[in-house]
Length: 198
Image (tube, rainbow, N blue to C red):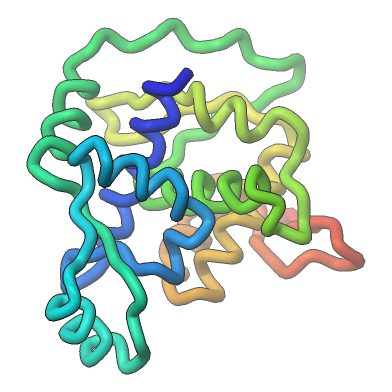
């Protein structure tokens, strides 16, 4: 379990690090994982930006950057090693679950939303069982996709996570999800996620 949480956190850092032009995952997006990031730093799996680098990132971002992280060489090696391990047997899908394939950037957004929910920082809860399915998802190396079997409610929670990503600056993940699964990510009504079927 601890190894899975470490790998999940490393993948989140790597996902945002790769999306950023400057190569650092920033405090704002990593805030729900700050405790785990400190643990990864203590294991020498991530590097935390020093004062000079934070000043450069602050100038780049146009706002004060209090901290930023990126994978260390050892962190990259841990993820590379994990990719070579045999794929675990996928969990049995729930009845009436639909097989969903998510790009790494989509999965990163869903992981971030699940992290917010676990940290009690999300006002809109995720569908029951989504966090466990995300944790146990199987990565298809050949297709470059994460495979999950999701119920309708879980699909709607994924759509909400992609809506959050869209509102914070990247709409590509949500557009592709709408195209692939016919669910348009939208803001929830009355505290419940309510994506629309296209």
